[in-house]
Length: 191
Length: 191
DNA sequence: GACACAAGCGGACTATCGGTCCGCATCGTA
DNA sequence: TACGATGCGGACCGATAGTCCGCTTGTGTC
Image (cartoon, rainbow over all chains, first blue to last red; front, side, top):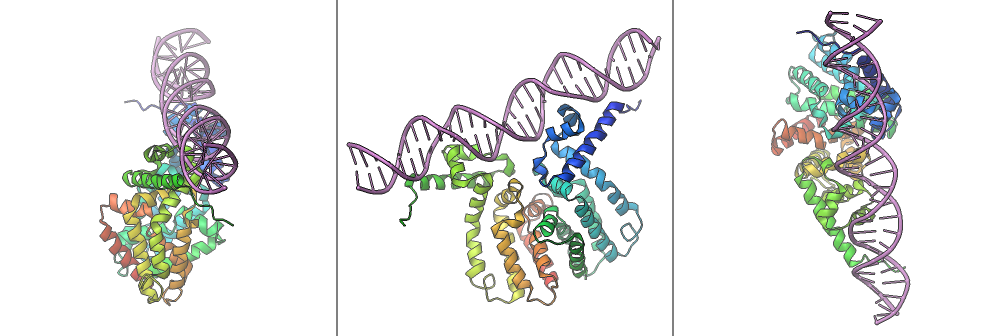
């Protein structure tokens, strides 16, 4: 069983595509406005390369998001409290929600593209399932929250990309204000 | 100023299109899978007729939804309590949320199509703005809810079509169970 | 270094879909 | 019946996701 190493040019192209797509999505207001041709051209590769590597448009966006989310996932799974394990339930729940919101604020366009992606339910994406699971676990330890599963869904729904986008661009809030509001709301829910 | 009456054939076609689209969206699991050609064919009209009447795909879906939502809007604006004006704030808020959720449950595929529609933010749609405004007004009268504007957004986010869809099809809840959960959560938030 | 073969590349090509356009049919009216 | 306005329909267009296959390039072997 020899491990097939990735060819050097393939690795180079993968990086080029991810970097180009990242820049493109970060710059654009409307995710749907960026075509796969755009990404291929910006990365200086052929379209075939894109699709062989990432399967389809959704796959590309997911790969992009997954790379960005990874540090957060690590921090939640094995980082120091209050985000990592070991913190008091209430503090950890608040820290998780704030971290998720902060991530979405920092990557607005990308998360918008991700939650928009191709009609696939955002509720089945790996990162969402992970966040929901840990939030559930934590909420179950709080006596004031009767229905942890549902409460976790709703609290995470408060961080949805298009809601955040609306609060920032239409209602004119700053990122900090949105974070304060979520913190206040969540604190009330957690009792 | 003579009022230009709608021509008889135009009215007939409009009804045919709405009925056909309604049936098509109700039947299909994935809104994106239904093309304008499908609707035109099912209604027995040409594509041009569709677009002249409704502008674009989003316009058609909105027209469809608007017709369905109208009774709910009426009931909220001028119906009897607890949904209509005059009820105690807490009861009215709970009634509104339940009514919205019930609507989305009864029109799952249509609301899914609506919130998906063409990259347009669901937060700027007329019905959402209306629901949010009344919910805000009502919440402001409750001392236990500090940030009415944001709380209204989050509570309405708890009724989002794709979340409801996920709870029903993936987590296997019944509509009644979802309603109970929302009611429990909202009751806790309202104090 | 030369060779052979697998892995990867790229961009022309296809299918589909939203949306437009315009010659023709139909309606309402005098 | 005749006529102008309104509406119809489907051929057509441009864009875009995704496929395909002949060619190139990297890599392990002698």
